[in-house]
Image 1 (cartoon, one colour):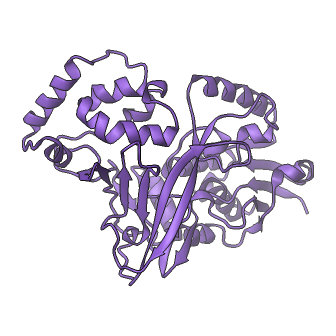
Image 2 (cartoon, rainbow, N blue to C red):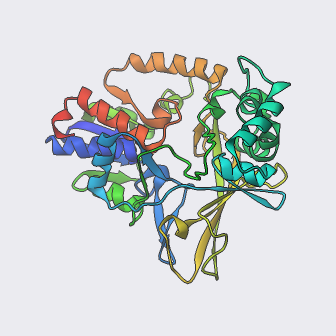
Image 3 (cartoon, rainbow, N blue to C red):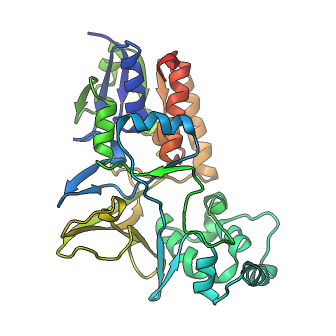
Length: 370
């Protein structure tokens, strides 16, 4: 049997295309390298709690079209992301807002916070920041940078802030109001039954093969498909012909605790450089759980090497130049469409992944079913 679409990867991008292709009457099959669907948003139930195996994922979007699409596949709660930062035994609200400024300096008025930040910026201000450190100090001054940004960011990316591009920090919210809502998004929440259930509903009726590595049988599947939707790493597709792109990877330590509440919040960031993990996630708080036990995960950032799971593209100048070489190769293979975070070597939030998938569906003339 031949297929209209062979879809490589059962994450959000691949699952959305598969759903729309099936709905449009197309023959499609999904190949997933892992032993489960849902990619990095995979959740598994432990002690009655949906546990985010590959780190916290909070769905948020301002795209009504994306929100309407994803709600077909699962009920969302009203979870609002309000992480907390812990530095030298003191807690600070995130994102940076008047609660943070009060905790940092004891100020109660926006004008007082602005005056302190302006004073700290004055001797360090750079009109066109060349790196993350300069961009961060431009935004929030030296105190917040040193206590809440520097250590966390250097752990996350494995290099000094002066060697990181300013773009990483530019979207960081800074508010002079008392508001701990991290995302400026109209629609937010987490699937009540977990993301795995949501993706399973998206893939209902679609043939899915797990533990199937497309790249080891590339010629076979290319011969069976009119089009291939490839969501794996673009450099891996081309056998690292120009060398591997750079990513950051993650390591997780998950444990069940015999208590009903460990830290009182879903996410606590540890911003000191000396503490090896970047954050602790307490999964039950994502779904307002009342279970007698709790499950926590310590998250460690680590250097990626070929064979590890790639999580975050390191989109600096050299890597972008290398990606462009791979993208040129991809353009020479019209049968294969490269999509998603790894296929396009671009950091996407979940809603952006879905927006890209819906746009691609239109280009493939599946738009009548979107």
